[in-house]
Length: 255
Image 1 (cartoon, rainbow, N blue to C red):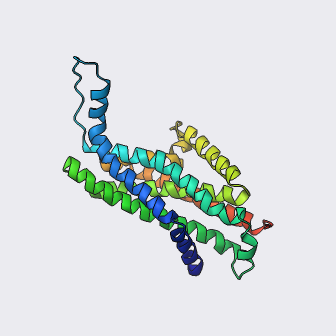
Image 2: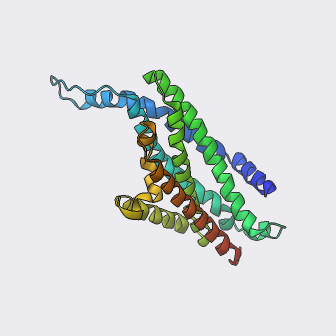
Image 3: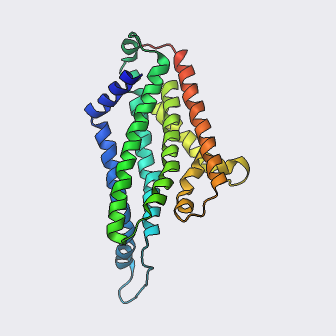
């Protein structure tokens, strides 16, 4: 297993995918506090008719947090989705699977290795983003609740892992990149729609993790609700990975 993970990590480094994702996350993390600080003022100056004075509220550090998590759950999430499917399905679409599986490699280890490798990539990228965001936010706003911000990134990371597990599942089922991409988008879209329902079990669906950051930073979060949401998401991740392993184990691999 360790050898497989090293091989997959080396592949990501050789193909520059590791660097690309880390750089993209880092750039958007750095831009978040900058946009929160200066974008309202810029838009106001561009859109306000001459002679009319409009007073806009002074941006706060909370605006920077909102911008950061908005970027993570929109732009970065879709970047991860595209990259995850590409990484999971590339050897299948290139016809390399028969050769790889002809070696003493179990199909279970193959799937788990891919999954762990991508989690490592996303975790490192997010750490880079957290550090970059914290530095720029402190420079621009002269304050940063680093401990609370760090805690609020834990649900965010788990949500990324959940999206990765969806990509893994459909990349295992399908033979083409497009089919896996559309299926993953479809499931993500349905879950996003269900997040509107905030009663009963629906309020603990994985998408709810994206709404916890403000509660954690402001220290008003319901610990019980957070733990239930984390547990539900973790169970769904395990289910998707287990399903991927079962499907791949019984799947006929051809060129």
